[in-house]
Image (cartoon, rainbow, N blue to C red; front, side, top):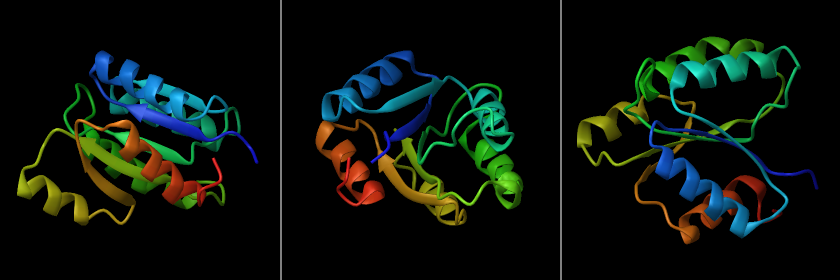
Length: 137
């Protein structure tokens, strides 16, 4: 089995640090990349499409970020979807927003696999990994 490949997109450096630690505590054999805004993450996905780097299987995406927020990322990702390699990308909106309007808006994006309210603890991360990798992580 190849290494799980996860992309964290959030402007909160503490969240990025803690979530990376949680993921690496769950499995040592994991690749985690982090970006603090959606624009950087979209550029990374473009590199993946060009074949420069491997496309992640999981993206954990925040809503509120500078430059390009989570909604903007999803819109841009949707445009790139037709040229993505034949690869399943599971995007989880991970946010502190429990606003019903955000949840409703998230449901409009078929690209989203799930909507998770922060804080996210080790058990929820294990659940996400198990769901995406069918328990083989």
